[in-house]
Length: 381
Image (cartoon, rainbow, N blue to C red):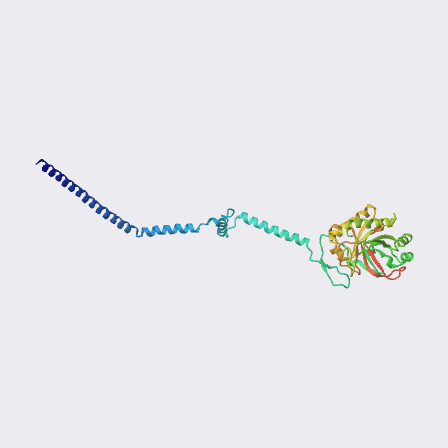
């Protein structure tokens, strides 16, 4: 009978365990229900307080974050050197717009200084720029006008002081003739009777020494040079000489100057040794493509040799050559022989001698001869 009693005890224990387990499960169920209820009430209370859906808010935050990221520059859009340039530029524009009606005193003063400076510059330009023009074309040719350069020394001659007397151009001061009458001659004037020329009132003669060929470049002596030189000396006519140059570099100019000095053979002359560089009409010639700078330097090389021997150098040219083919500003210390036929000249710059006629007549010379007026007293130098 002992075995029966043990079984009953075990069964009682099992029943107790079941009861305890049931209680635990029941309590857990109650707690779960209470938790769910509290949670639902909490959500309902939060919804009533905010009036918004937290998920939508969360989605909006996500969208805003995405937009912000999308607005940033990507790596291939960034430039190391100017990644902030655009932003700074925008800031500057905004700043200027904000202050466009406010002008600090210092800025106003700076603007005033700038305006004054501009005004002064305009005055300077006005002083150095001339509205005057003069015609550089030869008589009978189509007029070509160039501006007068105010920086080049002017002739300062009074036009009314020029007049024609005994078919000769003279310049007077105080009612007295202060100019000198002369001619220029070459082999083309033939044999000259210099004693008759002297009696005709010629004070000086510019005699051609020779010329350089405008195509060959060879130097030739004027066939009548020696006779003309000696005829002037024998009759008390003052002498100047000229050389028809076609020098295209300074070495050739030096050669031409030495040639003139050698041809004089040590004879004293009062008038200049003249560098005559004229253009050739209706043909090509050696010097036609020289720049004004080049021709000026060539003449200066000629002049340096002439001065070294104690003579006075001079440059001869037409209005066109003087205005376009040489740098007159760099020749202001040299005498000019202006070749411009006519009783009057438009040439505004300083000159010492002017050939005013190529159709003059003088007793002792067959045919026409060039007539000249000299405005300084070389004989008294």
